[in-house]
Length: 499
Ligand code: FUL
Image (cartoon, rainbow, N blue to C red; front, side):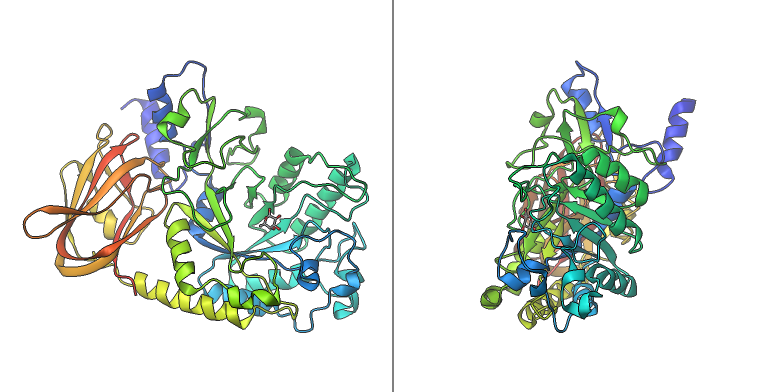
């Protein structure tokens, strides 16, 4: 081993995200397709992206003026007097989220209508002008305090589009936005996610705004360096639909043409601080084919946002249309189970409470999820691999340790002999993404006493892949990795029976 390799090697062993790794690569013109694929396999998430990915479940609270006007989008002309929750209990919101397994919540501090849920100095169009607590209330502060109490992450949604601000459409609006960010990022403790929406309509003077995103990113980076910036941001990508269903093939490393060394964050971790252009929609956004001729590569993982109700805001008439526990389970398998983070919206009602109908659905969903995943039926299995290193890691319930093959082996077979025959219908696989996302094709088979039979197959794994299939009873199973970018890794392997 050369000295340089030795240093890189030991740095890689240091922790989940090693110093020296970056979440992007700017490619030289003329790099071969094979070289690009190999590079893509070594791009890793930044520390904040890795933390975010491991949350798996995050919740949205859409609450504000629209809750009182029965609208999804306001106009900015609403009278602040309309905002008057009589039982607002942010503790209940966060408790419901925590009990349902969510690890972080995001509050709509300001939606497109411009009404601010905190007493901002930038406008009178806020809780300060409302009858709630005689104008002395602060919803952001109450949610932030509850998150602290329940020890879960806290994020803010701040709509760039503002239909109320008279400054909207002028350069001064970008300054006002900076002041709003400063208030939110300095008065409420740690902020873990800042969520910028893509909608950009007209303001009160009929003008559209040119958002100064790069200035906003730098500002956030300075005030809350651990916060991921989502959707219209550099760290987290919108999955491309609001249905709750991610892609079956979901790559976190994507091609990007606009990466810029000058936009790399200045902190100890060198992350790309620019929103990569392109992709979002379409079934294939990161395959070998899509990487052909790429100018850059970036770790840009998918967030799957969906509402528990038809709308993002609470409307009484939708009480009977709350998603059922079965639907939520399907969404869970299709978001968290497809290398994404689920961002489920649970909108508080006019009283300022999460409605009973929503709690009922969430509780049942949570009970079933928890029961299904409480016992890994592969536990205690003997593991056989010909070309693999550290197979024990697959069942040690420690995400940081992983199995891998020798550098040149991009295929592998891992065989598990369970202590006794078990019935299962869910496969769970996790790649060690702090080394990169690599697996491109895998098959899961069971031994029926005579031959190997296929129970499931898939393409990408990423941070987590869950696949459901008809129940199978077997004592011997195997994973065949048929294609991978460089040598594959797996952190965890699990078999479960749905309840
Ligand atoms: C959209 C917004 O226009 C919706 O109102 C909602 O906030 C959703 C999460 O993002 O683009």
